[in-house]
Image (cartoon, rainbow, N blue to C red; front, side, top):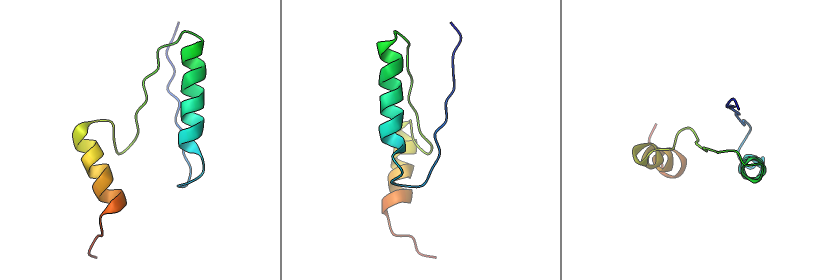
Length: 60
């Protein structure tokens, strides 16, 4: 079986996370291995950067 790379894009609050998790579960239910990642994110350092970018005030 060959692998797939599926990318979801859209604005914040569009439901991407809900759709991603539902699709991942459907693949798991079908016996496929699933790896989820996001950008920025996916590693401990990237998660810290994500939190900084999304939640900390930035001085122009």
